[in-house]
Picture 1 (cartoon, rainbow, N blue to C red):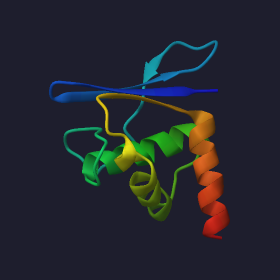
Picture 2: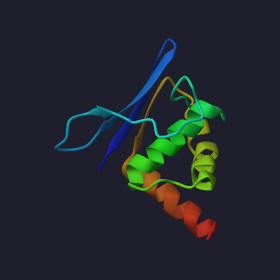
Picture 3: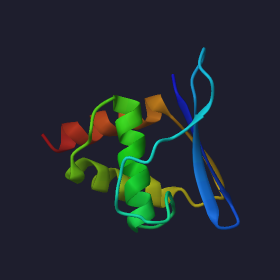
Picture 4: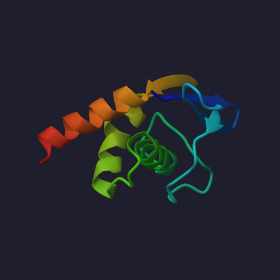
Length: 103
């Protein structure tokens, strides 16, 4: 199971991905909304890129805009601290729940 950790330091924000048996790596930015990179805690372009990138990494599939925007509003805006942790299982649970409510 992958673990995603967000950390903000001054004006930079980055996300690491840890997975048993693999080296820790930085999350690849899959979105193209934000010119300044990942962010969280509000509904802007940085959080949209984070939502899209987390969903892509956790599921292995390119998420639809509808899905990653919903994930941004449902999960990413609630991350209010300088550091946070999400697991792949938490992300997949959110996706399954959302899919049940939006067939």
